[in-house]
Length: 254
Length: 65
Image (cartoon, rainbow over all chains, first blue to last red; front, top):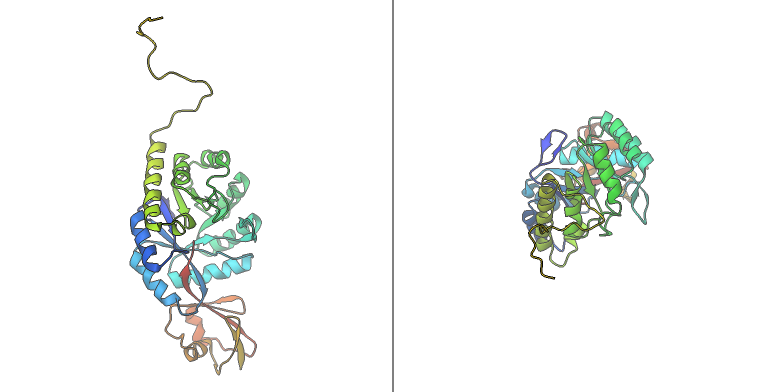
């Protein structure tokens, strides 16, 4: 099971809490997925926050608050500080966005914010790209986990750059790696785990599915399959066929 | 005095942030605060005086991905 900042979580499936048809379906999806971590946010209090807080506590799993929607270092740092107090955790999923069409991380601001927060005692989970240099800078800044995107948030496109993610895995063999965002199908999640990633973080693919509870279960099964496959050391791909049935002993018939 | 509370102008008597939260019915809620863009820890609310034109942000746990 994945370990983040010394804490072992019960499942490599990290699940978001947004966009479900109802709070009850959200809770059922979490149970069906046996999710290890719940991601949450904080927003202006309009009355709904107190009920949501109770619902989250009932899930009884670690909570990872995010800085979703932040576009500057200052916004992200202040949001993280509020989240730490509100959720009583040093964990923060750090998002600093520059472009609203792709929700691509602003990696320059991300590294700066990661350094400020790490120095202040936070345990930062940075939502980043798969760029080796950026990821190296994030580790230098104090991060002990990396969360590269598979594809833009909510796009459901899967792993846009499997080569880059495989390189990242090879380059940082001892750093917990999470594919965060872009997962649409269980096969995408399985692929991330087959590449040797430690966990997958997803939300929209489950919450916006026609049957979120069934999709949550499907994701959990796919992640388990991918994890088993990686541990089983898959064969290398090749260009030419290689017969699996022995040729030796074949009857001469023609 | 008039402050901005979550983007809306509100008349509050204060004088502290905690007083203003109490007056808005948020005194006991699970919330976090920022004053003029900077984090204001819960422990500091009762000792932080509000002034006219301050911007107070009050946030609560919410759904997120």
